[in-house]
Image (cartoon, rainbow, N blue to C red; front, side, top):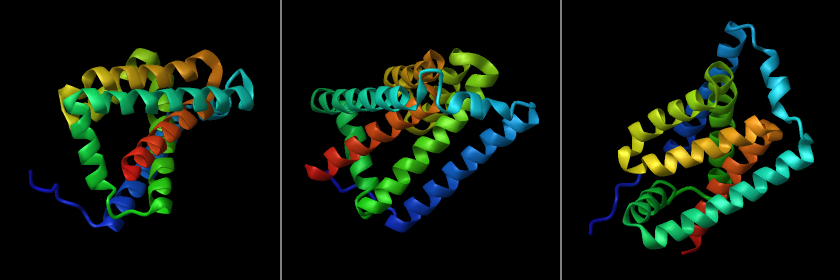
Length: 183
């Protein structure tokens, strides 16, 4: 099998950073347009506090990473996702990967779990996340995307705040990149 094309390492990091920064700004701007600027303060930590929010995010992120690792060993479409991810991050060092993971987690959570979920509820947030992400990876990822979006949205809805969902998102992505780089 031929090797997958690799974008220049700096290009992925720069384009990803710009995209996720714009996504975060769009979320905050949309909330402001709707006179919901207070939604960030209300959802940031959550009703259970910072410690429980971060702990819930850590547990969910670790469980998600373990599940993806197991799926990658058993399901061909997840092995394909591993190969594509490994190719995308091949030239990026640890610091670059960490910046990308953090920007992605913050941008996605501000947009999907704060702005979209505030406007359309959990079902709207899940639908928007699945629609956007399946346009990138195709419908074969639909079951994974549905579970991922629902779990992160439930963290916010159940009072663990954006802190919980952002930690879960970042931890899961970081551990998966780490797993792929160590193999």
